[in-house]
Image (tube, rainbow, N blue to C red; front, side):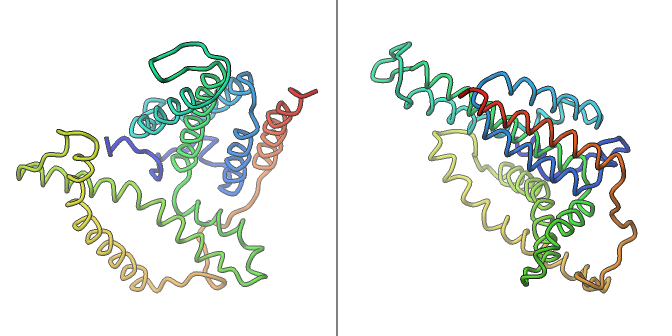
Length: 268
């Protein structure tokens, strides 16, 4: 289950999506996320689905690999769906004992489930098609105007990228610790949800120790290579916007602008 989480992992490639400037991809994902919260009908979701499928096609990332990232979060998606179904008031469709399923609740539940699915899939595609170094450079460049008011853009970008990159590493460590303890007789699968949660407590101590050890090793490695971030840092490949980057972000701005406008068209 832990190995199915794809957020933070990078899928190497030399496609159009991989070659896009990381700043452009970050701006597109911001517009993508913003547009999801403006959708008030099902039709724009068809356009969002088409956008995601086209991105997967162009990036040549296996669709099974992308969908695999949804598996560990299906419980949260299901809970969100059920809460909206049973606790949204409106026109009653079915009665299940003390619980009622309303038309508005069913619609809201589907809306929230689709929103979460697309949100997870879209953010996964960002990290799958952007290397950690490029992602750091892109975030730093976008935050660079904040340096004028004393905000350390490079340090913030580095921290966010390292934290994102450590997600699959820590999940791999957790999986190894679980298998080691299961070989010694530990049980993480039987019992109810509360008992399973209690059984996971012994994982925290070795996991935190390994996390601090890896962080210390990373800091030593950066010091040994005389790494210094900020103004005096040089890069092998400087970020330069190309015509295809500007054209892509312009088309995406129009696309997501249209999706956002559907919310207001509904009320006209």
